[in-house]
Image (cartoon, rainbow, N blue to C red; front, top):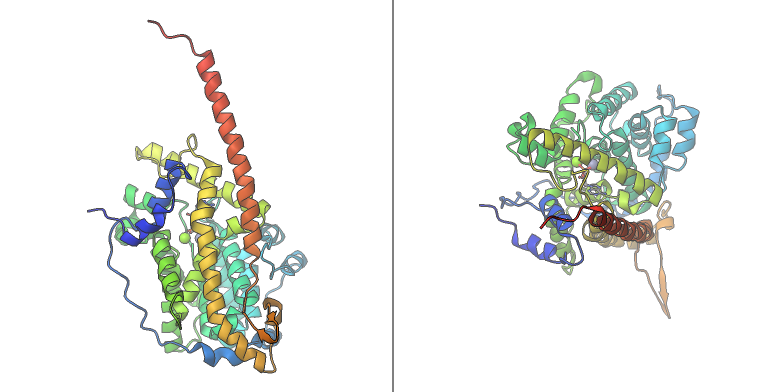
Length: 449
Ligand code: CMP
Ligand code: MG
Ligand code: ZN
């Protein structure tokens, strides 16, 4: 029997029928909830690290930069790539410019730069040529189906956004090296060999992959499995110098993070985190935290500058419409947003921002402020606060200085701007539709009696 989880119903009931067109509501319901009641996922049994124990790690980013591999045979970066990478730490980093500068290989350069910057090549003794092979093969996998959206650019975009969250909020100081390594690699591989079609399409068309993964998180299972299979090739095995325990922990983390990018877990994931954060002393699990961060980065383009967001949206719709064409050929019903002749683009984007992206970024920010707050107070008393200062706002209230840890939230302004533009677009579209209808009715021959 098809049954939606009760708490997801609560969330969806917030989508008022008059606020959102029915087709957009249907899309939200079918994409962002699990319509089949499934067993609860078993809780993470991984050993937990105490966040306070990492307090002294504040400022370690600078050290890591110094520990970068500087004297081994490093990959050569073209001048243009070096120039674009100067803006790597910005929220609205232009990954399209990186793609052009990197002659179509943004994942190779960005992946390499990030793993080097965080000192991962050094720490986990990743042979530079092996890393280069791995990243090139990952990049090829993203280009396999020539998707307009789910390609190497999207992988690079998500990895860069994850980097923003790690370094600009101070999250990296709460994580162990292995957790940082796993998070960066998870971001890079999170849509590896994406077919340009949705899980729903795999299930409805009975694809080989759906058969293999029993209709559950079909694509996500594939991304992970194919990436780990690639790492079994000695030439691409970036994990070759990890201990057995490190490998197990890394693998568990990557599996958890990438599986959590399945949009059907969205409402449950948000709800769980929200209720955890209401506790007096919340203990946030590392794996859950980085999973939420990756999920948010995966849906973050509506929270970027308009030119970037608009370009992503057009690419995604191209991809959805190509799926719609396939559905028509196969005689399958159109998936939501996939019918090129019948999709309300602006409205769907407003719905996506209002009900998915904005709440996600909100919960993610709350979570980060909650877990990084204690770290900030400890690091303030230590001598090393480098790399943290830029992210902190202190509020002074009268005699006492109350230090309330707040992260920068550049996405808030972008979301407002983008929503405003879509609303104007929606109004124009509605006007055009009304005019067209009027014209059609006006010119149609009178019906015979
Ligand atoms: P994926 O990148 O696998 O995971 C996040 C999903 O969110 C993405 O696939 C799309 O299915 C969906 N998504 C991202 N951006 C938008 C958007 N602007 N409108 C609708 N759906 C989106
Ligand atoms: Mg995905
Ligand atoms: Zn993705």
